[in-house]
Image 1 (tube, rainbow, N blue to C red):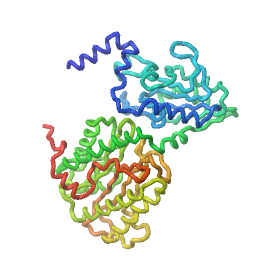
Image 2 (spheres, one colour):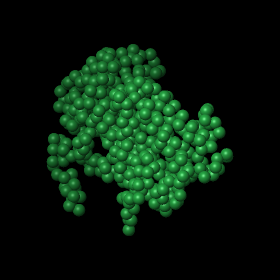
Image 3 (cartoon, rainbow, N blue to C red):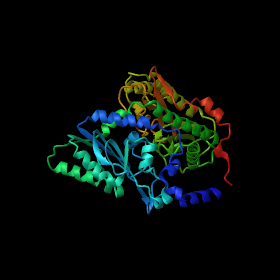
Image 4 (cartoon, helix red, strand yellow):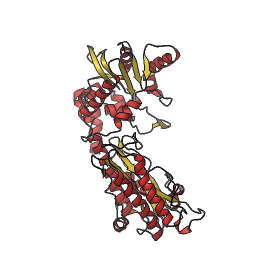
Length: 476
């Protein structure tokens, strides 16, 4: 009660309106990527587009869930990559040549980068939280110039009039509506006009350029994914220790999400998958309403997002704490396939070679159990019906390339899924779905498993599951 009263009084006090004093409330977290790294990325973009061009990026729009309730806001990947800015209704102009604009104190300045932000508004901030404002963008995020977003029209026009030949304009898609659409209307109108008529300025899409920059992660980015992966691994440990027959899949989902947020993750990387028995063979199952049975295998694909960077971790474990022989047989094939694939990872190796290593182990293993009749060919794909992995970063399915290089982050996630009543298969294997997934960093000499804290060996899993976890505590 005292805390709530303090917050109310602080909003009512004159200090709330004083820019320098209010900045201390904006950013609570210290473990964020530094402003100098974001500045280096913007400088790299300007170097790539050259002095005869300007580039425009914009923030993700706010999206309505229902009625007057919005979905929780998350920033657009490329905009966040260049700015570190987490507020909506914002735009970024980059101009290597520089554009002349009026600064916050009405003096005219030449700026190479301008971040356009929401105006601080005491009434709005009382409802939805404090804003950086122009001073916060400059002081905390290290921007050369920041203006309120109502000045974007003039800034955009000045960029066009600065003698550029190329405009790198992030396309404004149909889902950009509301205030964001209104703010971007000068650019939308200009682009439409260029498409209808000849123009001396050539339009280009900057997204592919930024995607290329994002393939190799910096040391700071790697630390963000490492933290997200460590948080995810601890959540998997707690889930293994907590699960019991008779629980519901959604109870495990709640445990994962609680563990993520308790450790400081703002979001989960994707909707949590907790499939028991017949649901373990559905790749992206996330209904999570089934009651977990005594002999069920549980496939849990759940991971945290930390400071905008996502992990992606999957573990499969028996609800009663003890693998059956059939579950263990399938599990061991998948684990061996993952180990074989990870052993291939190093700079210069093609991702297809890594995938082939896992495929070979799965095909041989399924053949040895009699589940497929021929070891050669693609018959195993009936039971391993997805790719081996994908890049991770600002997006759980991030940008990547075919040839591995140091600083890349990839998941390795082989799986075997045997649905019920599959013709020619011994029923003892029905409804066994196993996937094991980890986030792997490509190092200069090989690889590092960032999510190794979550047990993978069957003996380690069974030992852990003898303990009690935080999910065993009753709510009553």
